[in-house]
Amino acid sequence: VSPDGKFLVAGFDEPFILLFEITRHGSYELMAELACPATDAGMSCSWSPCGTKFAMAFQDGQVLVYDVRTRTIMATLGTLQMPSSKGSARCVKFAPQGALELLAFSEHVNYVHLVDTRGDMSHQQNFRVPSVTRDAAISGIAFSPSGDSLFVGSDSSILAYSVFSRSRRASACSGLL
Image 1 (cartoon, rainbow, N blue to C red):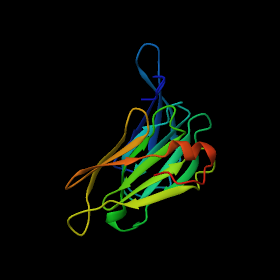
Image 2: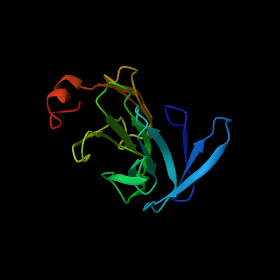
Image 3: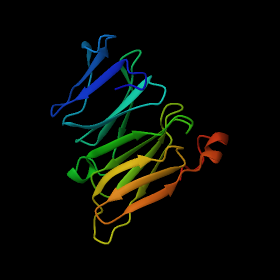
C-alpha cells in the first residue's frame, strides 16, 4: 500500500504486476496491469516515501522501479549474480523520508545493492555480506527510521552498516556506505 493509502501494488508467482486504486470506501479498483519484462516471480516490493514510485524485486534477478503517475518503468536494475539462482533479487526497500531517496535490494546470497534514485539510478554501490560459510544467505534488509543505518540479516548474523547521508547531500557520486 502506498504511503498515502491511495494505491496497492501486487506481484505474483508469475511475472506481472497489478496496480489498484483504493477507494474511499476501502475497495480495490484495478487501474492497470503494468508492463513487466521479468521472467520469474515477484518477490518483494517497496514504495518510495513520497509515493510516486515503487520498486519490485524478481526472482530472475531484476529490480524494476516504476513511476506510478505514468505507469512506466523508470529503471531496470540487476543483480551481480544473475541469471544464477544465487542472484535472485529477494528484498527491496526504499529508505525513509529524509534519507535522500536511497533504494536497497538484496540478492539471494552474498550481495546487497544501494542505489541513488535521485536521477537516472545509474549510481549504485554493491557490497558482499561476510559469512562464516562460503555463501551468506540473506534473509532480509531494513533501514533505520532515520535512514542513517542499513541492517542486513544473514544466515549467521544481523549486520549494521552506516549510510553516509552527509556526503550524499554534496554529490550523488560519493560513497553510500
